[in-house]
Length: 230
Image (cartoon, rainbow, N blue to C red; front, side, top):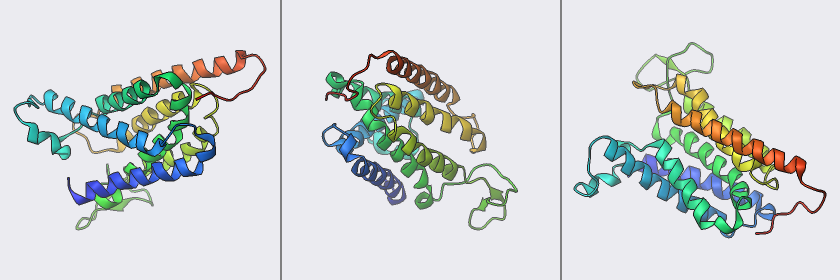
């Protein structure tokens, strides 16, 4: 792994840790930072394997290629892998565990996208907007699209933190935001094929459905303690 890619990953991990520290009194999940980083690692592996097979490369005959993360990672399969690990390992405490982990997960995405500064990969399509940035050695101004995503995810963290005690709501809103931010910023990215927009759209739809379900449950729940037993 290149050092700049590692630095971006560490930025995401640090964001997860900081958010969990701030919300420690509202999180009953044991070792939440380790849980999220572990799930992200599994998701990365699943996404890399999916990308390899999609490109016609057999992971069994080319195991060394699995480590070449820059060769491509399927965002959709990586997300499914990470969420599946979280859901399975915390199946006895759903949905509370996912809701409590949602703010730090989104903060991790903010850190990862903000890590573009270490990778020199923040820029997208050209623009003349006053906040545009240019790569070294060129005068072409471009959208700092990765920073757009980082700021959007960062702003979403306190919103999700306010919802952690409402079953399915924080996790649903978090999933919808994860897909929505990527969907909204995709037009500003440099891409030949347009990006996996249908994956982002699916995340928005599923997240909205979960959030609606959680909101409906909250409205119809009889008066009583709001705490989630973990």
